[in-house]
Image (cartoon, rainbow, N blue to C red; front, side, top):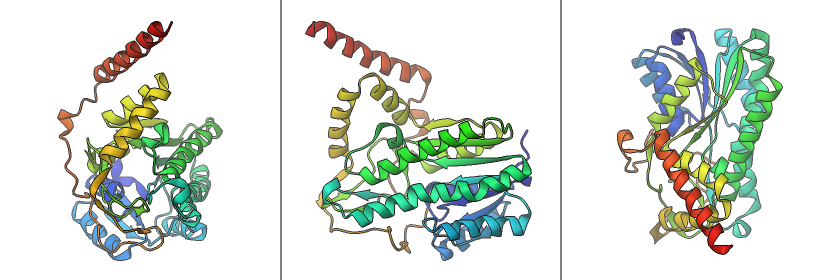
Length: 325
């Protein structure tokens, strides 16, 4: 049984969404959480809530797109507690737009935050893990890091890159039995990331159904500490989409493009915005983005549901092949 009360857990992107939910989940188990994000006031309020729930908290305002800031985060944590047990790379920004109509500097900012922020985090914490002979690095990717998604090329690229980073590090550290690298792939999650995204499409963004509460991702992350796994997908949509694209990539891509176009945008205009790419949004510091969520028990996450869905798609593709022959 893992003693969570002794753990020092660093969480980037802790001011809202999955990061905030994860901080609260660890605090409820008595862990010490080091809260990193750009919004110091939001982190201070979160620290109070974490301590009310039984944990300890340290606020370290951090812009993960700056290498020196991430190095300082690791050093501050170690100087304060003498150890780093868990490092969770979670900070992310998003950007919607037709690729060649989106400014390159904004695309670069997404990559700098979402991918290089993770690279900086891993590079900063691994020396501490190796010195101690133990530690768990958890990288939060996305289902689009396995399936891709139209109109979010920069975000998709960053999430694919996170998978490559994680798998490469896991292979490199294979002989370090007590050092683990885990990747979490959430499906569509109820967080404020959509409200804060950069947007060049002229349409307002919404979270496409089905939407899962952020606490489900936080629960998975907490469980990974006790039972590390290389890769974990959270939510039925991500699991089924991953299998469907492996079996029938062309059909999946065609259908998925239509689904995103129909379900990811509102029928109302949206002025061009850079969102929170360069400056943090003082609002939207909650776990939830206010999107209607499905009850977990109503979301078919069982192996049978995935198997039947995959078999149905496989049968369809085989049928098409036979008819063509």
